[in-house]
Length: 112
Figure 1 (spheres, rainbow, N blue to C red):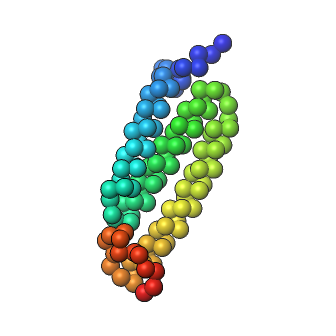
Figure 2: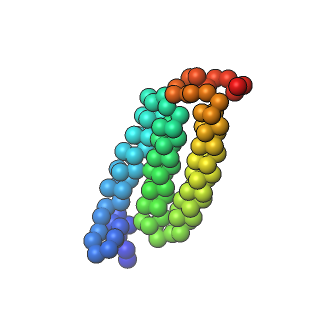
Figure 3: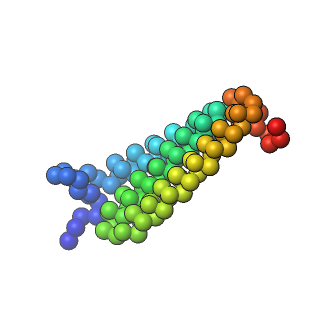
């Protein structure tokens, strides 16, 4: 019977709490970055960091429970994150061509 509190990687075992703690730290850093920073590019990077923390949590629980559903959800989350990054960067490039924007508060109007 497998020990559900341990995750085997390579030749060693780690507790799932380490992965969940790392995911919590990454998510907290991303959330603080979204709330504090005003640069639109930094905000997008922080959102990606938060999505990666969620992926780490999903994969940790999938590995711990010996189930593939969490890994499939993580794959779908990565697909959505890639689409979000492409759309967000395209909008930022288009806006930066029209005007110099360094603060998110300056983007309150979408007209040129």
